Amino acid sequence: MQILRATRTAVTPEIVFSRAENKLLIDGECYPENPLPFFTPIVGALKAHLESHRPSQFDAHMRLQYVNSASTKGLQTIISVLNDAGSQGTNVNVYWTHDPEDDAMEELGQDLVEDFANVLLFRQPLAA
Amino acid sequence: MNLNTFEIFQAQAQASGIIFYHSGEFTGAIITAAAESLKHRIEESGASGPAKRKLFSTFVEMAQNILHYAALPPGADPAFVHGKPGTIGIGKCGDDYWVVCVNRVETAHIARLSEKLDAVRSMSLEDIRKSYRAQLHNTEHAAQDTLSKGAGLGWLTIARDSKQPLEYSFTSEPESLGKTAFFFVKAVI
Image (cartoon, rainbow over all chains, first blue to last red; front, side, top):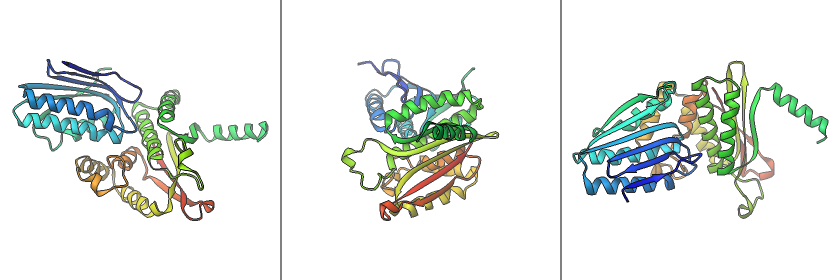
């Protein structure tokens, strides 16, 4: 299957992972009580695709309005998988869109990529 | 409780500036529904953008703490318990909002919790942010803290959003014969 999708729920964001376009979109709020069942399939699919295809370019668009503390590790695992691809030659861009008034979400983008030298972060305040 | 007593209770709750109060069972479904309702109450209360996010985040972290860690009442049979009992109240006092959570904990965990909270209480905002970043990149957390079910970021997340150091206390529960105590935490936003 070329596109993996997860529909947005009250506590988890929409996910669209297009293998053909080498794009990942995560859009919404993320505060499941147990983040593992939510993150495991997307992390697995992403890793399998990046390792087998080694694309030259990969873009991740993350538009998160709210993330609970337990889910930050899941997001970090995604960034870590992207970083591994980056170290194998993929040019990885992470577009982190946040509410301009929300310092915590703005900082989270920076905190997540810290220590990962092979992804490029673009922070974008969401236009009102 | 007669209706008159209930009226007094309700009037006192209103006079204390309470905008949200839930005391009873916490389950995933109840937290999701309460979070949705709380969003509307926060909106109505006229909170600023950043305060809205902080109130919501503090509620979610505290509610999920209750769900994951609260101890059961003395004599409860875990096989017949649905969710975890606890209390969360949110209110407005002047320009500030307070958020308080209460749940039972095993007395054996009091020292560990006090140590964690005292450490967070002693930190400046800059220290809290630094610790948060360090913990986010700490891949050994699950091995270092086997009682933790999360990322080890919960208290830091709550403390980061609180204007004042987190207040906490423990009250003994005599019926439990020393097994459990009530654990109170207060954040101010």
